[in-house]
Amino acid sequence: MEKALKLLIFLVVIAGISCLRTSRENTRQTAEESDSGSMTDDSLMTLVQYRTFQYFRDGAEPVSGMARERYHVDGIYPDDDMNVVTSGGTGFGVMAILVGIERGFISREEGYQQLRKIVSFLQSADRFHGAWSHWIYGETGKVKPFSQKDNGADIVETAYLIQGLLAVREYFKDGSAQEKALADDIDKLWREVEWSWFTKGGEDVIYWHWSPDYGWEMNHQVRGYNECLILYILAASSPTYPVKPEVYHNGWARSGDIRTNSGQFGYTLNLKHNGAEEYGGPLFWAHYSYLGLDPRNLKDQYADYWQENVNHTLINWKWCSENPKGFKGYSDKCWGLTASYSVGFYSAHAPGEKNDLGVISPTAALSSMPYTPEHSLNAMKHFYNNLGDKIWGKYGFYDAFSEHNDWYPQKYLAIDQGPVVVMIENYRTAFLWDLFMSCPEIRQGLNLLGFLSQLEKE
Image (tube, rainbow, N blue to C red; front, side):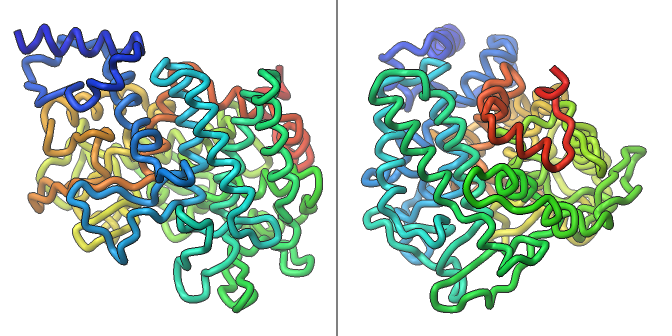
């Protein structure tokens, strides 16, 4: 009886009918391993997307509609920041909302209304040369400092937000009058970001932060390779405040010094992953820039970005499979090291003696679905069927866990939930890749920087 009920609920999820919204708390109870045959891989992916999408729907900050930085089931938050929203995480979240519309989790009108609320909030929130801060108070639109001197513009988080908003623009630009108006408002926000300002007076590199009180004192140059490729693509693509190609080649690519010939386990890396050349660093580097930017056949003079991301992911999977540090629970089906909550609060988990702390972050494997579908699906089924409610809650899989330390915090982070929804969808339909890459400015910017992409080949 229990098994039949579960199967019925899964079919309801797939159909996306409205009654699911009132039954979402009962969508799934503990899954026994013997029930693993009751769902297809496709059904499980839909269920995971649906639950995770709810972080950005039911879990959204109510005034702004934006994505909360974090959600803790126990209601205990550092610095009482439950209603602090995140610009980058919202960029991921608006893409998840589009997936929700397409999958029937919500209606097009419901999705539009939330996106309208978000864009209206962003129009009035604090901005600095067109860029938003990392954290914003959801009730007021005022900056919440990320640190003392990081109380102004964060151009990297702004890039993640704009990546998502451009996908929304493309989705609604040919719609109803109100949808076209939303697309126009997004276009205006995009045009108001002064990307060239962040070259600090014309240097051949982009600086991450600017503060109205501390100026450039953070002094953090954005150089590759890491999670920030999308920043340079957007900056070169801007119709109003573009950076020169030299900023990309001399700054991000370090005048060619970004190249290397490294890797592990027989998987080659052709880019110097900052501070993690052999192993490729935490896996979010293969996710954040590529939620909209399509890595398939994306190449420039420095790398084949699809192969780079595949090999980066396979190194991560192989490290966990071999488990050289002997952590309990690691296997070829229980893998995924990336930045997330950690036993010591937060850490950029990655392969290697120093950065592997025995903490698995489900987003790492699940958001890698386009690169390693077999390994990622195996991880998804293991997480769901074998670990069950230890790591599964109302917004999908919790942020991180450690079997080795018997540590299962019931916490979520926006920047880890968003890529799960988006990258699973890109694996299934290439939906967000197709939307973002349809932006004419992006195609122009890629050509300007010397990229060859799937769109140019077509």
